Image (cartoon, rainbow, N blue to C red; front, top):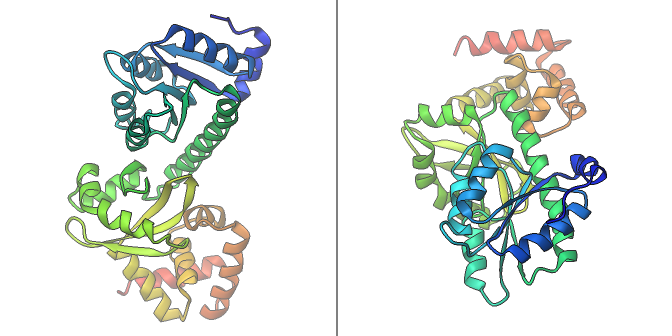
Length: 310
């Protein structure tokens, strides 16, 4: 196979790392050469087990997975990948025969983001690879940001199956007496029906899971077919409603004030509520006027004083 040149390796630092899993030497060679020429670093595997082992060591940006391979096929390998919290965010593009529509369905159900038919059209493949790598990187950046500010966020596919969740989301589930698998089992049907109705951003759904109901808020679509949600427990909803009623605020203003009272900056509030810091500041200007205070310190003190009496 063609070795990567120093120039190709330099370009690949920006383009990304692609793992090809295919048991056909000719196919591996063709794809390897095309991807290296396009500036990618390429890793190879001959079956699903090797693909998982390589991914665990090298963490590729994308996996190009043959559907049918010996020992462990692409479907099993992709499903195993999505069960690993360290590897689940890696996008998988399946390669399948032109007439194998069942394989396409199985691949997408196993967690694949896309597919290409064999014989592979290299122009089509090279057009899709950077799109999926960019989407995956954007998702990982969002996940890191949400993890850092301690938000109970999660992402699901169109069927309501969990793709990932933050540490804080796991804590909320545990407080409900639920493991991730139990949450998915109890919530997936309701979520899938909700997604099918194309909810608007910031709409909420009440779901009966665990020991008490939870609300999930729809934050957006970080990638095609991926729904970003935030868990809202009954305590938070109650506090927000109390602030709204007491100070005569809108729903959005009450949300901003609640997070302000918890010591969050405008930047952090914007990340939590998926709005710009400038929009947060505009909401706060209205909140200060309604509360009769002059600044964020006074607003936080007033809200905390009121909440402490509840």
